[in-house]
Image 1 (cartoon, rainbow, N blue to C red):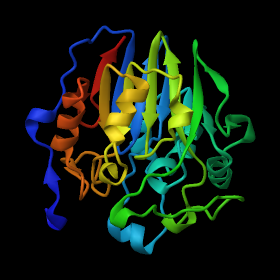
Image 2: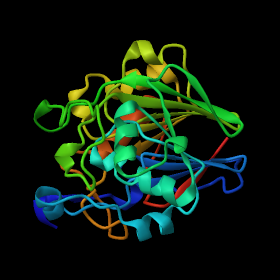
Image 3: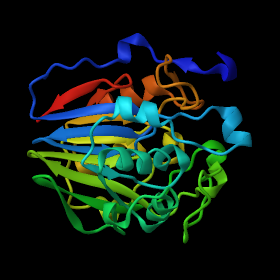
Image 4: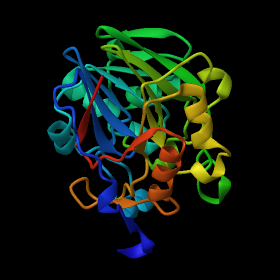
Length: 286
């Protein structure tokens, strides 16, 4: 493999030991997850199209409609944490296909409008409000985008009007960033899709499970320790660790700079369980 990409050590993969649990958490790669509870399906940051590097550099980004439909056949609510292409590109198509409601910032709402999603399917939030999802609720927790390569935040900016569609990746700055707090079937889940959070926004919240972004970890001092101290989770599921320019069906590799074994060791050394899931694998919660 070019670029010196590292495979995931086989001993890191997590097996599901609770197939009959009331809540299922399925990993979609990148920062994407499916949460199923009480007959309601919430999808977070879906991105299964996985555009190749050449297209990213030279062309426009088109969602892979067949793959989206095959991998995520059902959704009731779709949450998007920020508007970079690897978080937002597939969301409007998924909502078109399933009739799901998109819950996101005004930046992502403008992306959805560019893709032709009906206003009745869009719910804008700036965070700090409880929104009913099935028998539970979700709240956006305002944040910033983490620093990644060269200790920089990529593609800053807001999306104040619908961008060109299909877009180039430069048409999709991150906009407002939201982490998500969900309560479903008695299980508390926090989703942190970029390696940053504001302590004051997490104060008072506790989580059973945290989906924690791996890329950019080294640029956020005390990232893992602070997340565990503030949220006191029983389990951390690693996300946004994979090189997302290869097909969904291909063997996953780690993004350059992601030390996945070190990430897992740091979590476990703090006394918290850690999980690394293959694409499309799920675990039971609750």
